[in-house]
Every structure is written in structure tokens, then in C-alpha cells.
Length: 170
Image (cartoon, rainbow, N blue to C red; front, side, top):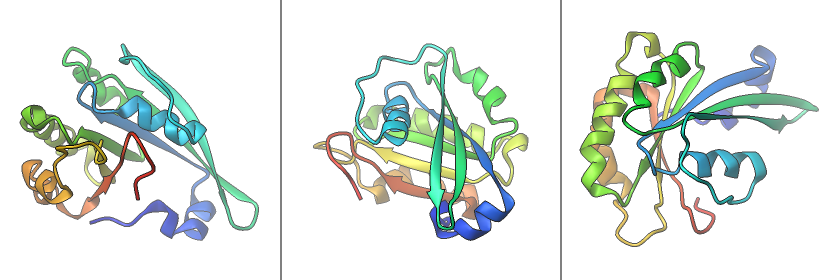
């Protein structure tokens, strides 16, 4: 699994001032909810994204330094997925959000995830897979999601993290 960005604040702030991050995943996975949770530190009711949302989030680091994350939350409907490449072309990282309860679409999520991760433009780009809705009944475990998405095939540049929609999830 990969290292968290917060593990390296001094290193990050001395080299990078800002990061561009694409948030991708199938429709209704919770991408926009996660974006606005990061932006406002609260849950916001959202509607399906018909194109993209863009937000800047500043993270304060020790020594009065800040790092800015530019997030691009791109709609996950099938007709919008060809546009994903436009948002990952020059990105510093990719967050791929998966609905942990939607077992019927896990194979579709795997296909789209591997398509993006294995694209020549994205070689070496860090990938965070967020298993969203972990706090809902009947959600798959992280181990099940890792297996169903065949994350080990993606190599060491990925990490898997849980997220919840109803309450804070560690």
C-alpha cells in the first residue's frame, strides 16, 4: 500500500505548493460528497454531477506553510467516462471512489479503474481507492473490495482507504 501525503509535510511543502487531484468513479459512488466533505468539513446534500466540480482545499502544515489541493470531481456516468483522460493527463494523483454496497457494479468499477490506472499517461501517478459507504449495512469489507477490484495487479502505487457517509469513519 502507499504512504499518506500527511506523512511527509516538510518534504511536500519544500517541493510542492499545490497538487492537482482527479476524483473519479462510477456514478453514485459518492465522489461529490467526498469532495465537499474535504472542502467544508461537513456533509452536503448533492445531486448527480453532469460534468465536473472543481474545488481548492488548503491544508495547513507546521511552520506556517500550506499546501493547496486542486480537486477535479468528474461525473461517473458512462457517457462522461471518456472525458476522464482529459482530467488525468497532468494530474498529481487520482482518487477513485467505489460504492462499497453496490456489489452488482463492482466488476464495472474494476474495469474502469484498471483502464485509468493502466493508461500510459497515468504511469507513476499515485492512486487512492476510497471504499465509500463503509458505514452502511451490507457494505463489502476492504479485503473483499481489494480482491474484487484486483488492486494487487496495479502494483505498489495504490492505497485503499475506507470512508463513511453517515458518520466519521477512521
